[in-house]
Length: 132
Image (cartoon, rainbow, N blue to C red):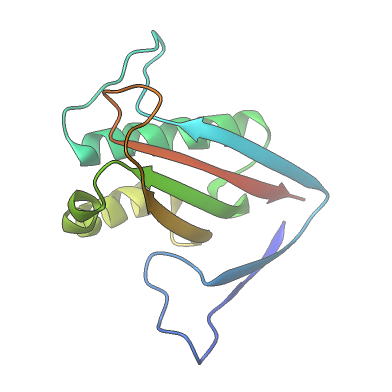
């Protein structure tokens, strides 16, 4: 994929996300929402950063299985049950993102939800990627 990440001068600087991503490729991969589920289907991690790391790892595992890499991500939505906690942990979550996915950020949004499918889950990530 070729990706042009755009930060318009009329918007605030993008930190940890891209305002827009223009992606050119031949395959779209739609990634289902991923939480901190282990291979037995149980939520792991007692803290938001632990769950975020596992959920992001699961999302990237699905992407790699489809033939993609983190730089192919064009859009990711984060669903959090507590946006205040997400903001409080933002520096740590950013470090986790960079260690697993690098610095080529997709267009992103964080949305607070009342709860997720699994009541023990604090965070879920979904998205789509454009592959070459």
